[in-house]
Length: 264
Image 1 (spheres, rainbow, N blue to C red):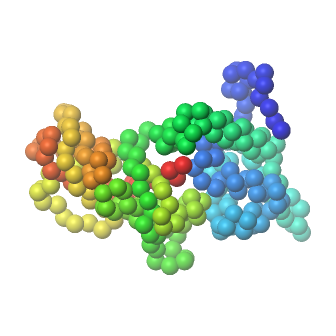
Image 2: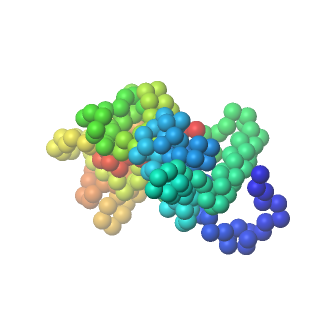
Image 3: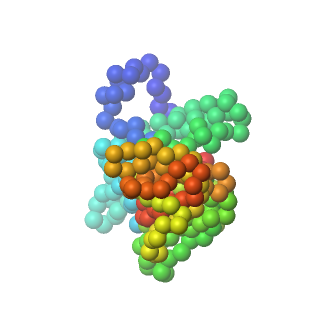
């Protein structure tokens, strides 16, 4: 058990292991994969235990390694005739820190309201649009297709498509009925008047609603649109436009711009 008693802020800053890698403890299976590698001494066995592909397991390790800034897994154990994997000291330290972070997080949420607050548990990101949804279905062109289209349903009955890699879908454990958050940058959302002429395009989400507020800009206007289910979506409208508070509007966003995060 690794403790942090007596560790100062300066000591923590000096650590080579980046705290950013801990963010994935609540997001998907990446921390779990690292833990299973330590338990089984094998990346392939860790993948089987987690119910994901070997490729997805490697993606998890690569992502955590990039965030940590140093190797977390030594995959050269056993040499040319053996194989296998083991955690580096940095990998063991990351797991210990993740355990403490999880315990602290649960304690805070329990003190706030017992059941946990979705707002407090939400991801910290620059993306302004966070829409609670459920996974309706997953679509692809077959098991060998590296891309998956996740069809999400926000409150109100509309559908929102998100194009992600197959490995990301595996690591998130996406399945019909799973609660998720659909995230999108405001700059990726194009807003226009409801009756404005626009060509229909595949791979583009179209969400209808009413304009709540317009903030005028020199070249474009920032627009907040209230969707079905009282959700709010922030985007931008090119000038000139006829948008004003109360007018009907459509928000367009590419499916590749929609990021999926677990809701809890």
